[in-house]
Image 1 (cartoon, helix red, strand yellow):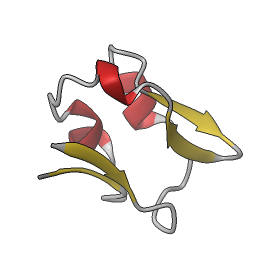
Image 2: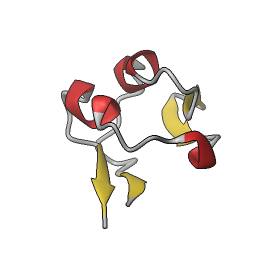
Image 3: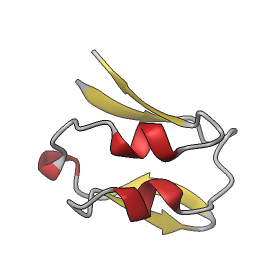
Image 4: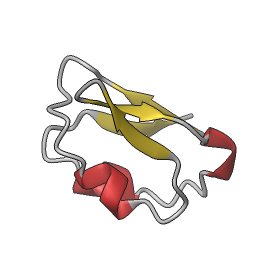
Length: 59
């Protein structure tokens, strides 16, 4: 699985960053960015918290 971010949908709210306990995501230039993908546990919390459906886990 891998994280995918749709930057066109991302509003930079930071909810996904706050939901991730592994510090995989960060807000840079008003958009979410994957900064530490190897630490991702694929728990789906970031995806669940995104109101804009801008982040998802894909096979």
